[in-house]
Length: 245
Ligand code: PEP
Image (cartoon, rainbow, N blue to C red; front, side, top):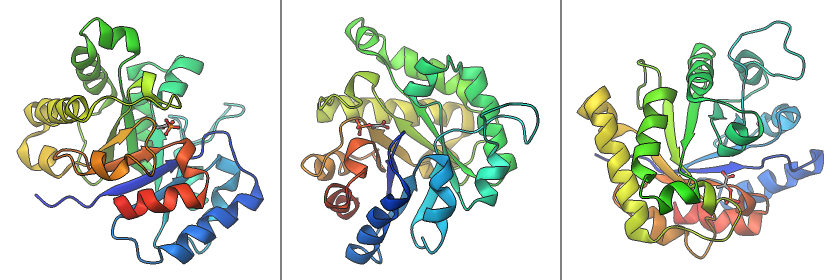
């Protein structure tokens, strides 16, 4: 199964209108990337980045489950799509920790993303204490079971495996550890969604991906690219990661 790789950048709560220059520099250096590139800026910057972004795609970092209504400060999937987003990150560990997002909430938001025609990038991953206790795979399987609605396809969803302890820390699991988790995710999803869906599904690795480790990580059999935080903020860092994908 040939799966097209994805280099996704999560800008988190960083960037201003001047950050359009990052996208422009990336496009100038990699006008025809051999992978899908998705940049997820803070929501107010989406229209500015989406204008003329192709072949790069633009995504949100979260959405509300409802299409509209009295939810001050929230943004619906429909609004993200209307502003030019084609993807949305859901269930990032920072959302799960800072906003108490449960698997059920992530599942409802994933349904919302699909309703609006967005590709959901659904994040799962264990904490350090869960890994130390030998529970990483159990935790991830539980998150997958609870966060993914029944209608998942390889077209409407991308999974991102992000060990919480590797995010923004400069630490990563070993290559065999990453390979083990990705294979376990694909096997687990095969049981529920069947072979064709699970084999076509892209599973990204996220957590301290840098220009220096991206190629090795992306070469692993079940790794279909990366979700990149800090190293997606500068074109000189994200460019080589795009090239590695
Ligand atoms: C992330 O927040 O999704 C992430 C992977 O961050 P970093 O690359 O900075 O570890």
